[in-house]
Image (cartoon, rainbow, N blue to C red; front, side):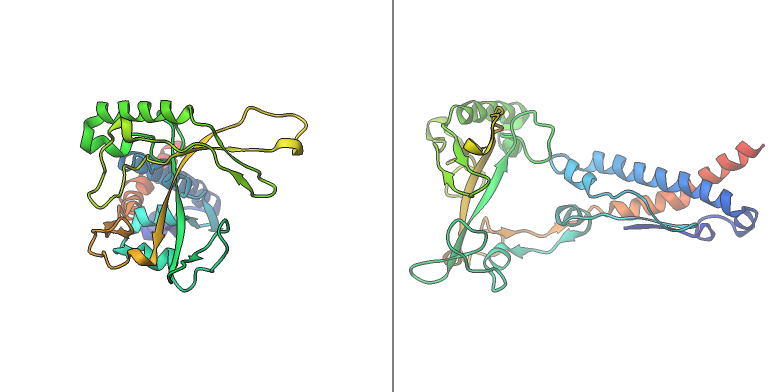
Length: 280
């Protein structure tokens, strides 16, 4: 969160006292609008596949009083990117004591026959060239295969996935009729990590909503592409970053601090100077 507080914090006192309330608001408006625009600009340079989701977390300016404005960053992923995150074992997050035990098909953990719990975690894969947030197919392999190789892989995976018989879900009942699953063995896609059981596209399904008799007009269905991976209490004990369910520690970007420094050293003085020049 960035707080643009009281111009006394960022401008010489003699200049602040020379402004009436209307002038303060005019200068502050320029400052906060510029701060938010700069924050978005810096995020666009720092992030790639997560850029859209981070920027969506930057809220509109909230005026608390005539000389106090707040710009907040909301959302779990934006704040992880901003502040960083300690190493996290997702067994604790996804299978911990606060997660409800539910029947298969509902959101929560399911009991194993031999004791413990498990659940299936969905991963969405964007189509190549998609402008939506999230990683397009193939992009995860850019370090392993190079930029061109990763793009070609994404095209190959998408072509095969489009040909799948779809998995249909009724949005009213929640029932799902499973279609085909992608067999990537003929594609010889490597594993991203040695501890992965398969490549990340193995078993992909093409999901579509099935409205059936609930709609008089049937629109062209929109497809999404998903894989599902099972996390189980049986897979614990692989810590130290050697498990796909252990998220390594990440450092934050701290863009809010960068924006606050920019406001104090450049943006606010420039906004005031522009206001004074306008009076002249």
